[in-house]
Length: 170
Image (cartoon, rainbow, N blue to C red; front, side, top):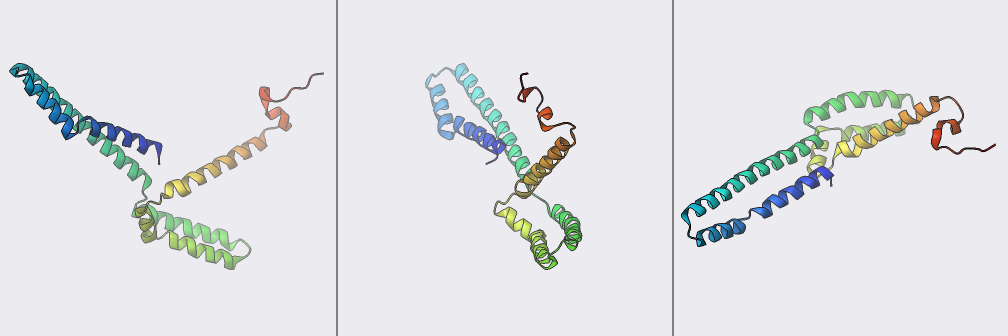
């Protein structure tokens, strides 16, 4: 589970436990038992203020959950845009590759996966396209860029290690 979502869940549980109906009822019962009108009013106001603060916290947590879910979902427009732009690029790339028949079959599978209906169903059952495809692709590109940049640094590999590299004594 995403650490952010997990943290929100922990906060939600804490708020829920803090002011359950039983806990609030016990506080009210204890305040009434003192039979001090002014004290009772002050204590009841404090209980109401705590409940209002908890409601605000619950709304904040609900909004945080919603933000996390929205960030993970692809909209129909997102899916259509990806399908309309990625599939033609893939067709161009695959046309240049050997084994065009196998590539065409793979392209058909990708096209089927990129339909609005398929992506929507997969998201409904919990598949996270951004995490499954976006994050690995981001890491792959970052690795390629790092490797490419490292290959452009002049000098032998030992020189690239800097101060942390092994040293030879004369």
